[in-house]
Image (cartoon, rainbow, N blue to C red; front, side, top):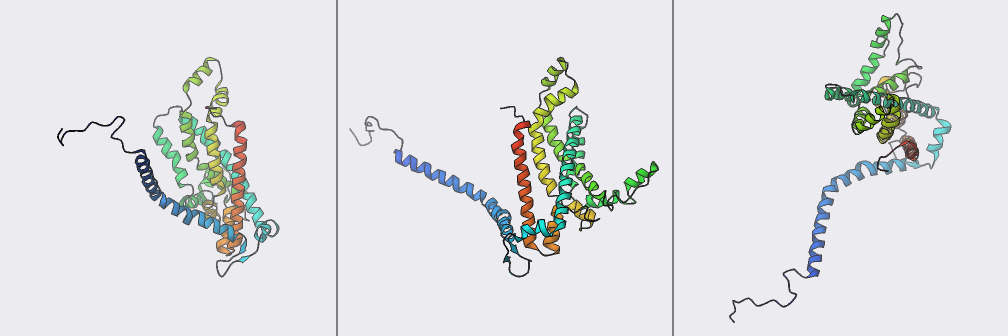
Length: 321
């Protein structure tokens, strides 16, 4: 036998590396994959800590202090929280205005969005154009320009009063009267129905038409089909829109700030909660007190969201359960 001849392999020998080497290579490859993933996630982690978690924890600390943006903060315990309910009548007024604003405008907005989505779902021609046109107010609704335009429309010489003048009705300054100013803000929020409308429209498209055909053969009316088919199958979408719009409504600021001139006038009728927080923080320089108010708002939103999730098991229907 010469040296160039291939020696026969012993029984059971293979080309595979030893098991220990295979596991080591696998661990090394996984470490490289984890390292790559963490490098891509690093900007998000930095943003989370620097932009979200850091200011959040700082505001929580400041809420227990007497801090005025100038000088050092002094620990005052729960004084800021007790002050809201005992020594700040505008806090109660802002809380009341915000509650009316949220619990009136959000149901109206969702009902209007659902009604329009059902009209568009009937197969009107030019649906993409209508969808874009109706979605536009959601993009512009919180802008300063729209708030200024809204103030002009509902002003004493605005478009609303000119329209009422056609019928011989004498108008008024809707945004300058304490009884109607908050109502104009509610109408403005309802007008930004485009975002929930688009989501409703997508949900309606997911309901099989065979359900309605079968119900029609059984003699079910349109109203019965709506309450027995549309609403149950659309309930997860309604729940999603409800949570989203509740949170957005509680944080409304720009419209009220512009329409009232930044002070909640007339007679604090447009003083929303976020505007009061702003005034305390940046007009009165009571940053500790403003932080405490901000945390109370967080707790209110969290509590309402939790209640909605608990109640959802009684009216939200999921087809996979």
